Image (cartoon, rainbow, N blue to C red; front, side):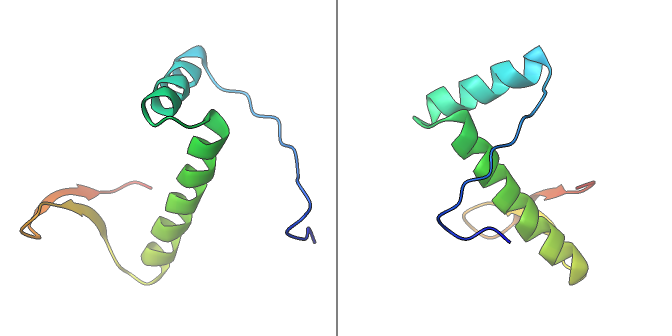
Length: 73
């Protein structure tokens, strides 16, 4: 098992469109594509845990009203 000091390199193939979107997200967020993917995996982990607990994921407005329920993840 990897320790915190080890880095594992992965190779990832994506479509040109997905690469362009990653570049846009990284640029607008003043970060890197790698960091965007790390955050995406962390978010997916939250979704997976919620799903296993029979919870739902959504986006709320400032009044805690459900604007969008995220399904299919």
